[in-house]
Amino acid sequence: MPSADSGWNASPFSFIKYPEILLNELKELTGNSQIIGLSLMDNYLDVGIDITNKLKRNDNLIIWGGALTTLNPELGLKYADCVCIGDGEYALLKLAQMVNLKKYITPIPNIYFRQKDFPELQCVDDLAKLPPPDYGPSEHYVYVEAEDDLLPLKNFDDYQLFFQKAPDPNTGKLSYIYRMETSRGCPHNCTYCVNNILKKMQSPKMRFKSIIQIETELNLVKENMPFVTSVSVEDDCFMARRDLKELAALFKHFGYTFRCLISPVDFKEDLMNELVERGLIVCHMGLQSAHSRIVEMYRRTDINRNSELVLKYFKDKEPQVKLFIDILVDNPWEKIEETLYTLSFLLKSMPKRAALGINSLVFYFGTELWRRAKKENRLEDNFFLKTWHWHRQKTIRYTTVLFVLLKFHFPRTIIKILASKLFVYIFERRVFTSFFIPKLLYVIKRLQILKKPKSLQRKPELAPIDG
Ligand code: B12
Ligand code: SF4
Image (cartoon, rainbow, N blue to C red; front, side, top):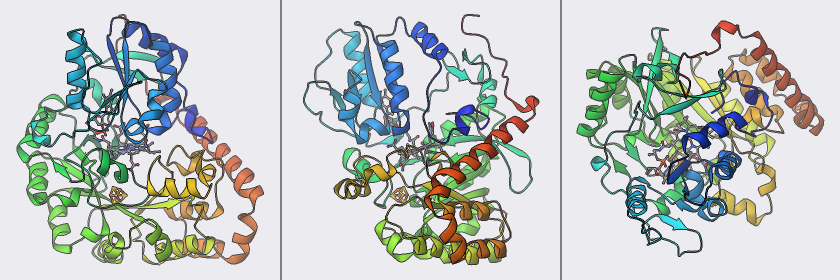
């Protein structure tokens, strides 16, 4: 992923190209590998193709997996020898066993080979049987942008350089964040979301890791990575866990604060109080829109039900928790008045300390909104939106800029004036949204990068690959 000070970040688009030096080093590193696996999201398609072209030999097998192939296996099969659909743990193990016994190309659940039948799909029913994630460090490498080099991790301390760091909203002290999954799936079914497909391809039910298993993983983190101070739970719907309080107590027992995502419908004041007491410091809430027609289009009418309660809780009680409110922009069916409705809702209700997460609506292959856009010939509208990052898009709406001002805590009275009909009428014109606003942003981003003191740029001292 490009870092904040990367030249890529200044790009108005999301083309990501790995440097030739990295591709050459990968080729050298995988010279003897019989199987090469790539994990890809949609925005890495071009990178996946480049790596595959570079590493493909007659005697190796290149397999792609991840969100891209689960959603669109046929696309992956154009480039890879085979793709993994859905959960990969057992599938990859079976593939490795077969390659080892030199008798591959027999059907393996979840693995789709070129010119073979669509495979039987199986999910990992019991996540508790999975071992903890493998952090090496032996045989683990990382591409270091500042060095333009692929370097091996020497020991667990090296992870300190690459784990996300963010100030603790209570103490201001920098926390080192360990990302983890405690469940897979989501009970909801929003029309733009990948869970539409995952429910069919993986499992219609949510699956949970056991508390004991999570404890084992955290014991390893404590032992090997003592610098970690906070856990980020990446689950799509953390609140769906029945043993939520127990898990939060476990984080506290390890001395970790934690972050998680919630859906407004799951909000209960008592529960929230208990989570805060047990170390919740950052809470992401998906709102996406406040306008009833758009909320319905996203199938979030029920999910958004308690959003006002959540906002009121954070406004009145001011708990020591940072609330992030996620919204979607760049919806081609959304009228300007509907976007402005969400803006005015937030201007009124968003707590002062809260932050706004602004994401572009992307049509991920196969989702309900993708199908609708395809039917109406509107895929092109968001064709270039390979990333949620609103600031990497070709067109940047004036209304998005207004959300950005809110995000950066610009005085709300001024935002209200800027949201008046006259300003919107002038600045929503194509010449602004497709030219001046993106260009201005590009200049701001470049200045930010140039302004960054050299000392802040990451220069990790890892061993070179052959040293
Ligand atoms: C955690 C997470 C993140 C984290 C960490 C990402 C990371 N690289 O590890 C963060 C916050 C950084 C992140 C960022 C982004 N994310 Co994200 N993320 C997720 C999330 C919530 C969980 C992914 C996860 O770790 N799951 C747990 C693991 C075990 O499951 P898994 O990844 O699906 O992998 C399994 C199978 O797919 C398969 N598999 C995966 N890879 C491979 C490879 C091989 C060879 C094989 C055989 C099998 C295999 O086996 C695995 C185990 O069963 C998913 C949502 C979801 N429900 O999946 C979105 C998701 C993957 N993210 C998404 C996106 C778009 C992004 C961003 C591009 C958003 C942006 N800002 O623009 C960035 C890009 C990050 C990057 N690396 O460049 C989309 C991808 C959609 C798509 N069609 O590609 C998803 C699906 C969210 C969504 N609702 O749409 N993300
Ligand atoms: S609540 Fe979030 S994760 Fe669940 S379906 Fe909706 S967008 Fe996807």
